[in-house]
Length: 132
Image (cartoon, rainbow, N blue to C red; front, side, top):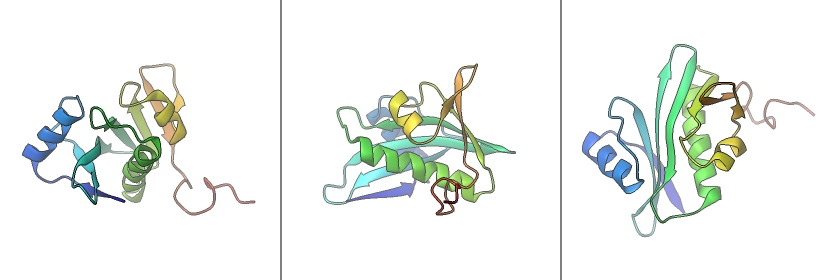
């Protein structure tokens, strides 16, 4: 089991960024994914919410850690928060995380340096918004 939580302490955000091998973006929101048994960091995301569009800059596991399914859940939790804020389009840096993971959570290629996801209906309980 694990717990995904917002990070409100900027010193902790900096520490987690370092554990994941990335730079902290202290003016962005951040989520941590912590192993409930050991209390160790499993993964980390940094993101912002703008007018009409969210942006994921970081979606990374702790260096040396690998759990695709857990990282999938962290990615979707990050996207769900952005969606709950009323923003249904999300961009991600192509190097925000593992390319396979970013595609699995719903991002698609664009012509630029980013990926994009339309989250309309993604979190309403209808299989990505498609009624059957």
